[in-house]
Image 1 (tube, rainbow, N blue to C red):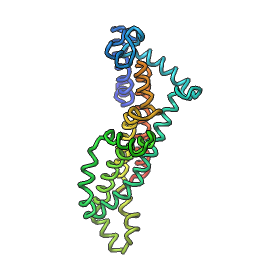
Image 2: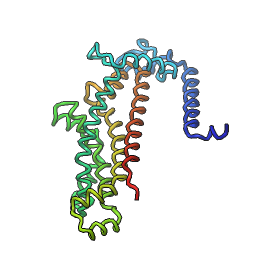
Image 3: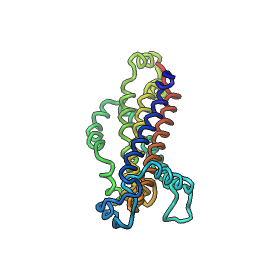
Image 4: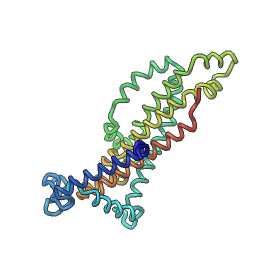
Length: 280
């Protein structure tokens, strides 16, 4: 029995149960879903406190009930202005994947070039270091002005925030190939392209996959904020719309789904990295 309790998944389940129990106790003790809304929240949402009786933080039971309602109507498209939550998730995933793939197509080849050509890296590094810390949302107004389309602007934001971890990790991986492997390649007279394909690329794969995992996580959490600013669909838009309606339980359900999908994306890339890992 003691050995069972030391397993990581058992500890995770116990922590989840403890968290839900504390959440239920605190929210139930303060009135739960029947408590009045803070007047300031109500004012920001354009409603009076008497119009809405939803508590600021609903109980886990209330969230579970709302989650069930959202999931059974997840693919509802009868009202274009009130799509099911699955459609919003699909819109967000589509934008993330498109922006992410574009970032991969740019970052990986450019990262190899930077790693293999130190002078090129030294020339571009100042620009990379200036652009890399800029908040993705700082680009949003400019993107909306240039592209005149919220979806295209959101995809651009995903691209600009996902490119840097992959670019830097690929460059470091390409530049850090073991010297003896490079020497063997030279001794056998391996051509430049073959050297990159057979030596540099496999040796850099762990670093590339690490950068890709970091980038997908960044892209997935940035999409929520980007969609709150300008989009008319997507999970970020859904959360903002539910906030305007003071549907806190719906917001929590959406947050949980965002976390689950983010975990799935990371696990998928981790599995891919384990399959492509290069053993020294």
